[in-house]
Amino acid sequence: MHFSKILLPTLREDPSEAEVISHRLMLRGGMIRKLASGIYSYLPLGLRSIRKVEGIVRQEMNRAGAQEIVMPVVQPAELWQQSGRWNFYGKELLRFKDRGARDFCLGPTHEEVITDLVKREVKSYKQLPINLYQIQTKFRDEIRPRFGLMRAREFIMKDAYSFDVNNEAAEKSYQCMHEAYCRIFERCGLQFRAVEADTGSIGGSFSHEFMVLADTGEDLLVSCGSCNYAANLEKAEIRRSKTNNPEKAGEKALEKVATPKMRTVEEVCEFMQIKPGNLVKTLIFETENGPMAALVRGDCEINEIKLKNFLKVETLGLADDQLIEKVTHAPMGFSGPINLSVPIIADHSIESMENFVTGGNEQDAHFRNTNFPRDFQPKHFADIRVAKEGDGCPRCRGELKISRGIEVGHIFKLGTKYSKSLGAYYLDEHGKERLMVMGCYGIGIGRTLAAAIEQNHDSNGIIFSLPLAPFQVLILPTNIGQENVVRVAEEIYSGLRARGIEVLLDDRKESAGIKFKDGDLIGIPIRITIGPKGLMEGLVEIKKRNETQKYSVKVEEVLGRVGEIIEKELGA
Ligand code: ATP
Ligand code: MG
Image: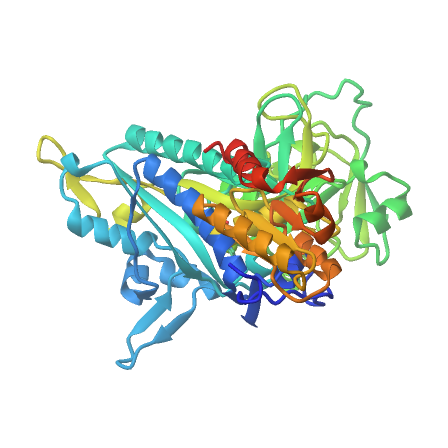
């Protein structure tokens, strides 16, 4: 491709709306353009890289035995009503009516459609296992679309769905996808970790997220410094520390203290001259089973997802002022566990505490020297707080550390959630009807590309690895006014193309400086610079985008040298 012909509108300035580096570089590099919030067009350069990611994903899915299909973007409401998600999914599901006033939605994911398809077409154990996937546009009306392709509303996803005869077989399918995902992200040149994750609105029994490590990531992940335990912070478990406190001083008498207008942990601690570690926070939550109280040490936070999973409830949210007053008989900021009539779940962090401060369930009052079971009795102790740097690993004696990541892929073992609600049965070898056991597996194609750019760039622009690069080689003639420069550039161009190498030839009448700048910005891995001075000695220059070193190479040897680099790095 010639630069003068391709639609590649590079920008000098950083676009103001772009908050993260990958978004800035994809806009500046002329890869994408915004149509509306979270909705983008892919320009030729962007699309070429998107296709590279898709190609790797497709190869590995096929290699793992999955079969490619394409399902509709527009989905009828009936299927979502059958699965129960029409009401549960919330506003991310973009709904509309057709001319006959029938309800439809734009597919944010395809569990319903695939289960309906498979239940109609697959009837016997002989047809199982089966794994079907597609690479297709999804729509989710995200509350905060941002970071370009990273959190878009319209985006390309690879989604695969496996159907098995039983749990054991389903776990094999899951494992097979786990391995395929590792190969995919390795081939994309990403530094990533597979972490244990919450199953969220897709539901199901267990899941892993594939996280690309990056400081700009929206997710926090917890990993052990000593073993391979890694989990999303939402889900991360904490080792229970020793319950008996050897330094126990003995219980002191409960004492009510006036704490006028002291509501926050900081205010109470300063006023009472104690550390947050000597205070127990009481939070009131509302669930479909009624209100409840959760207790945690003052220097820790409740993890609502862990609490929700522990309680096995569908909805959980912090109580509003009115409910707090009703439950505690005090305004917000003074809740405590003593004399509460709602169930109390206490985090393990308070197990070894004694003589601690709690809210008084009365305006402007707290208690000093609270103890349990003397003053209150939790219904359960459980691991319901947010993990912190330095907490104990739940799997070994090691310590947890926290880092940021971008979730590029997510695999779920779904079990029979959808086969049950949508009626996907098969006949086993005895002619008995059984539910299929499912798994689902997603990869964000655009997000994977964005994550690769987050991990691989410098102050001049993108540094594409060969597998994801829109072009493998950039030919940069410094002066196209000179006949021999143009001729050699075109010869090398044709020679590389004849070898199946993807080449961009910068034939623009721009200055060499601008061409170098644009070349670095769009991050083509191999650059061949051709200038009049070098040509006088029959030499051109090869430079890799990820190295500073430049090599002078004889014109006749260029094709061979470039071929070698590509072969080595692509392992072709
Ligand atoms: P998140 O927690 O980031 O919203 P999710 O749990 O909703 O992700 P899944 O439903 O598991 O995501 O979707 C599978 C994959 O699709 C994700 O791992 C991610 O790579 C991609 N993806 C999800 N939402 C978006 C989005 N808004 N824009 C781009 N890619 C997305
Ligand atoms: Mg989401």
